[in-house]
Amino acid sequence: MRVLRKAEIIFDKTIDYMLMAAAVIVVLDALAVSADVILRKAIGFTWSPLYEMITYSLLWMTFLGTTAIMRMNGHVKMDSLTSQLSPKTEALLNTISHGVCVLLASVMLFYTIKLTITDYQTNFVLASILNPPKWPIEIIIPIGFFMLFVQIIRNTKGFFERYKALSRKEKPDTGNQVPEDKVLS
Image (cartoon, rainbow, N blue to C red; front, side, top):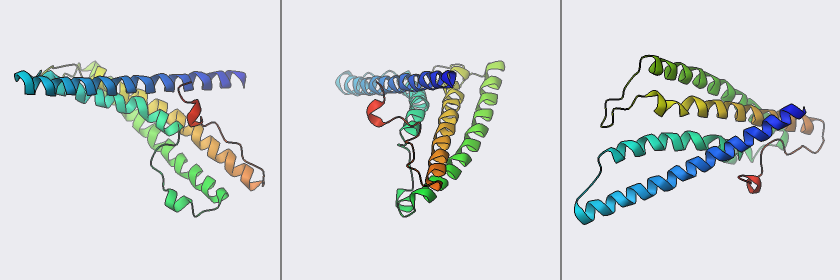
């Protein structure tokens, strides 16, 4: 169990670093767009590849940040429905829905790995201003789905343990979800 706990700590630190990288991308994108607007208005200059680079960075930002959002349970939930349920039923419903999400994430992981490998092997180049190879841009998608897959498994385990504890009429453990005040610490 000590190895598993160390793996969880490393996984959580990786999520934190991914979230920090996503934040850096947001700041850089905001600065780049602001500079582009100012230059366009002031001297009529715009750098045409900027839009394409920002498009790619938005993809990276999204997949770098999704796992942290899932870890904090910051994703879209049906609170209006689940708040009407008993804690035990809510834990069961969350276990089932997260189990379905594990299956979906595993399918997405498989196909995004397959696509990225195919694009790498065929040296697929995007028809755009920069003409970059596609695989370095899309490599974040299977990485993000892998991280998301593991986090959803962790969440599912936590909800199932909560359900079991509530079934035994025990006080449930908070699970392995990181409290918001401990993120990025």
